[in-house]
Length: 335
Image (cartoon, rainbow, N blue to C red):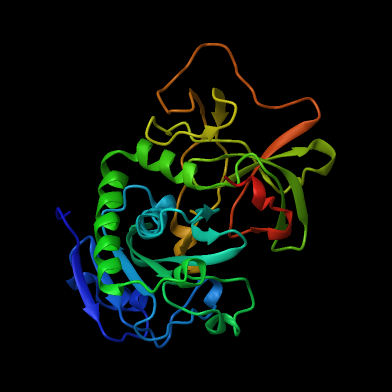
């Protein structure tokens, strides 16, 4: 990987992610593609991302050295949040699990990671896209079916897009290097930026089932750990299990500190949009057990430590399967 990102700027693209998917073979790892506007900007699940000309940030990072597939989207999420905080330090922006950036109840930035290349059952190249609303006015969001905001709406200040793009490139490079070389620190920064931990939440499943509980941690694979009453726990949920191959570079961060964990899950990695054929080729580690403290420093002691209460159970949910019911969030307690 190069010491700094190669930056490609285009006045207009259909989609920065699509450009990387079509040209990744000829581009260097850590290339950042930026567009002045997008004619076919997309969000998750094929939703349209409104991309007016020379108004906001539309960018995608090419990751060819996939150190940990499950949290690759967090690179641009953390970079976007750091850039926003530099330009608007008083703004209480945060990451709403898993990666989108919010201010209060409104989305400020969206993240979309898509696979570019699959070799021997492993995704080896990813396009990590980010769209940040910078200078959009309130009227620009009237056609959107969810609450959205921009830096201009929040601060009443017009921002220099060229300067913002340069600082975003700086932070993107910084977090990519951290992702590759100090994953434990990278993971902790991502968890710290997620402000839903400790809240009582409702998660709405794709099957229509609602899960109620307290968000107590984020798992190494990006799943949200929900403590539920046993009678309300859904049998289809994934138990609080982790891989025997988990290392000190992939800790679980919890409000309770020390925990033990084991893994038994066949789910596909979270946050990467891939086809069904690709998902079937992606394997998961064999089951086992290990102990780590909240800083991922390895085994803490020989005594079993558990977070479970007699009347509760802890399950992991993934954003591909559930979405957070925003009406259940206590926004006054996020900071």
